[in-house]
Length: 256
Image 1 (tube, helix red, strand yellow):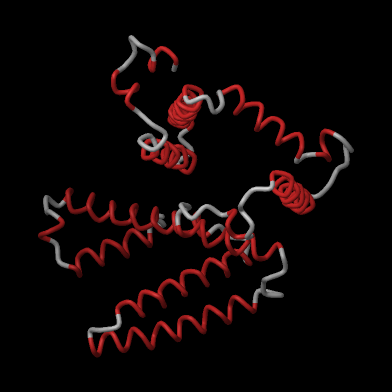
Image 2: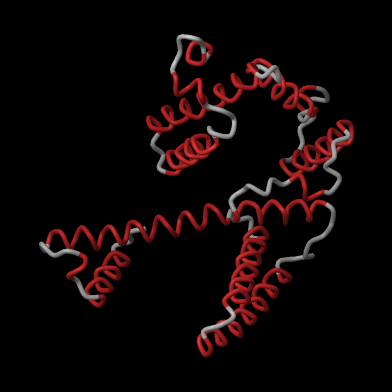
């Protein structure tokens, strides 16, 4: 990295900043996730390398600006792991995953107190730049840790029904008048937020669930396109009825 950013290095690399590298950092992160879901371990090795390169790149810029080095980054995470796993490195006590999570949050809270940051409010700890499904999940989890939560699954279940009814009202108005799109958008948001909450109670990752649904849609649509190619027919030439028939065919074959 020092060579790439050095006097005789790469002009593109030398121009980069923390901010300019954000799109690449996000892209590589999603490519790592994609390789994991596909269980493509050869590709995963490559993508983890690309992600690691981005981490080194960010650390190198920080070092040039006299903030910290890659060694400081490694030490920071090493110290944090030791500090937040006292049951491993200190007491040698065997505790449940739930106890580990509670201890982690308690230790994290004490660390923030010790740092005396300006972050005074609980939910400020959740980055607003998170993807929306993850953001909703994390906000709900944070609130739950201090007791702001439903007592059982019937709470989020009933809330979802309530939000769906409100969505139906706004949808009816929109269909009849063609107005009220902002209110309709609000209700869609409330339904999605409630769905995430219900998923949390069911111990289901909403992100993983939606990715599964997207994969199912992609695979079944690919089947339609593959069949159309075998019939020497373009998708544009096919009727909706023909595509529906092939979709149901894919469904019966268990394509998902």
